[in-house]
Image (tube, rainbow, N blue to C red; front, top):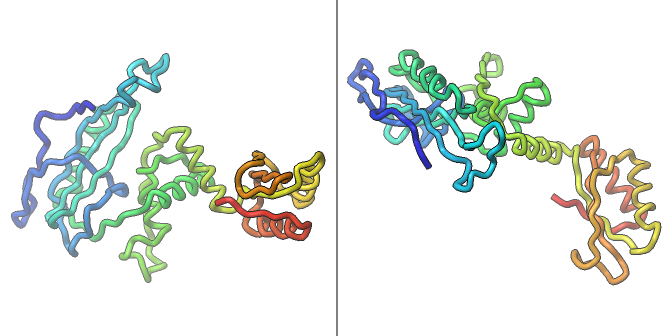
Length: 277
């Protein structure tokens, strides 16, 4: 792993009141900080530093292509420090490599606007909550954001900001920044989101292993307007009786109520089944 960064970390003058200055670090953006702890009321920001970081996707250069023969990741990596012991925020802003130094320079220009300011609160969010925020932006706002860009929204919709609790009238502006997200990761987020919302479900159905048995099951599903996207047979596992088979059926559905309707229909027709989560 290689790092391209300034020989000396940038420092900032001490703010009024004698708070320490010149603390080295690697980064935070508003709305994307990942805290070590929670600040005491009135904690002051004392430093903001940012580095130009590059590292390879793999030692074997997996992922190289005609446009990128030397695959690597590039990111502006900054740190936001406060005068509260152990409290700091870190964030990565990934780029395509070209212009990474420009992003670093852009972050450092924010120092004059942040250093010396007070921090009311810093909160954390879980990866699953960030994934849900990415999907929410994509589906409702038609906006593509990377995980770090959607972190602030995740904190807001999951009520992680104590300052807003009990203040429904308070207007809040959320910064959504960065859309550098891997396509395969985005596909996983969408699929997991569909499962969570009940719009994608997998049922394991036990049925006799003879011609036409599957047709009867799919007929029930079709009658209740479920769209089958994948099936998988198994005759040896899942406690299948000799002469029977188990089939995993993945379907697109309209929501939890539709799933309950499908399960009830299978049960009414005498099929042993279970939902795969």
